[in-house]
Image (cartoon, rainbow, N blue to C red; front, top):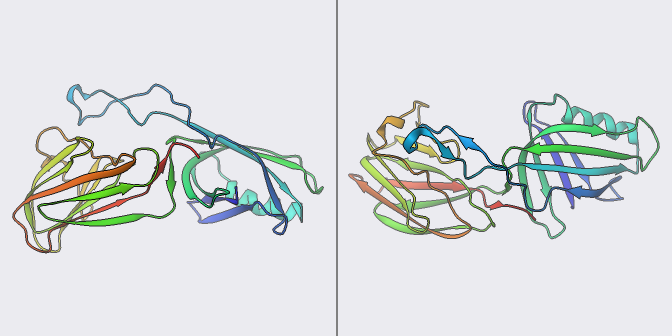
Length: 258
């Protein structure tokens, strides 16, 4: 790793482990960055037929690494503990691989095993567990698709990723198809110019720009669209609309391991 940065999202406090003698820190024995360990999981998803579905995103990832400080150990330790404090909250962990791939994931901080010492090169073991086993690109990508067209949306990672899709009015009905993966979702809902509906495919929410849920606008059983690794042909079909009617697709490339 070139670096691992742990961010306390509640207070925006971060601590970066630089794998550099110049910066006074070395990262050793990084574990859990390979393929994730899959576990069986059943979710009660009301939108699915029978209200029970196997969670295709089931899995977990346990990540750990050993940090060795080669400078002022106590100062580094105190700064690190500010970012690690309050177990039970999701931390955002950003890291860069030795081949300069910049990725991130959310995880619970589980354990810090470190001798209380001012000696340099004392090992500090950090352990995290991520409920979503995928790594995501730090860069959020966005693509705009015009009404009644099909566009190729490329997920440059190695695993499925769940996009956020914003439907910009005016419209009276809309269907989004992933012709590559076979998923489809249809809404019957009127939007005027300047209004929009945002579909979060990961959290399976459908919200107006006001924050109000319009899940009831779904026609039939929704299939929340995924972007598989590689190219995806996304079709955006509307009833009504004009040049302002667009579909904004936002996503992060997803990886199952590095």
